Amino acid sequence: RSMKRAWYVLRGWPDCTLTTYKDRSSPTPTGVIHLLKCDVKAKPAEDDKYHFQIHHSSHGSRHLFAENSHNMHRWITEITNVVEESSAMGGMEGNLKKRGGIRLHTWQSRWFMLMGSDLCWYEKPTDSFPRGEIILGPQVTAKACEKAVGGEKYVFEIIDEARHDFKRRREFACETSLDRKYWVEQIQKSIASQKKIADDQMKRSTSRSMTRSLEGSDGEGEDSRNEGDEDEEGWNLTKSINNIFRGSDNDMEDVMHFPEPKLGTMQKHSSYLVWQTKYFECKDGELKYWKSQDAYDKKKPESAVIRLSELLKGSPSKNPIDGANILLATDTDKVYSFKCKTEYDAGA
Image (cartoon, rainbow, N blue to C red; front, side, top):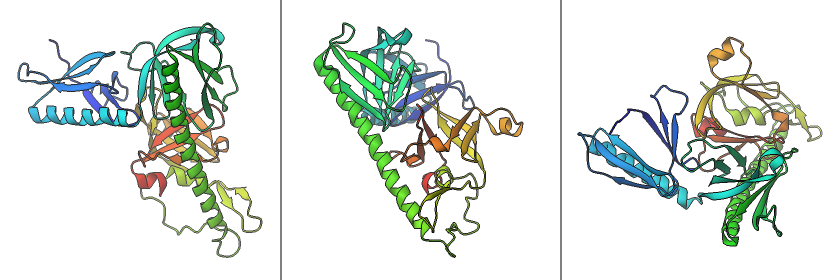
């Protein structure tokens, strides 16, 4: 049996993956093992290597080797914990059909995974990276279709009010009425969870705005932060965005105020469902990021620009599962996920 040494990263909910890299310094993954509904067990040792197996009824088996018994049993324990967490949190997977092709007119069979706010689909169960995804944000709705659609009897639809193109309404078909009922219920639970996060963040943002409007020392609505309150290293994304809107003592209306530019590194959740480190600048109502600080220093074009005026109500918000994780939802079709070094950096 040929073996190749690699670097593995285990991620819990909502990723629930074991991601493979060529080595520790590689920024791009070479493969992903999705752990939902997997079984992990030790196998007989081979050539002084401690062997364990990750098995899935649809994905097949992956064989991994640790250097000693302690490491093997530790990996088995931690992977098993992630598998159990993914089931407890309501993760789902299975075959569905989706309307695809040109203008979404043909039915295509795909392997689907629902993890948290992400509904992703793959060409086949063994694929590492998704062909597409829908972010189940606050402006998304899901319901069963009353009539057959395109020859399929058990169809449900997902409508994203944030989109204004032909993908605003997507249709998916199940094999049975019970399957459809279960998928719709789980998707609706995910949407409800995101709406609660947005509502809670909106309430906190409103409370902070009212507090700031009453704290001006001379009636001018000055910022009550003391000099030297900035973080010693890095910066706080939630604080920077919320400071764009400040309460006015005179009429209690929000007025635009752009804080000092902020620079620093954070991790961004990519379309590969992995975290990648980027270099960010928050300036003049825009959040920009580059591949690296070197790219920024050399004045290379930014990778993307997020206009903070396009954020939905309740955004940004903190992920209740991981306090260092920040969610940004825009009024277009984008939802971004960023991770700071600590929970304090994300929401102090």
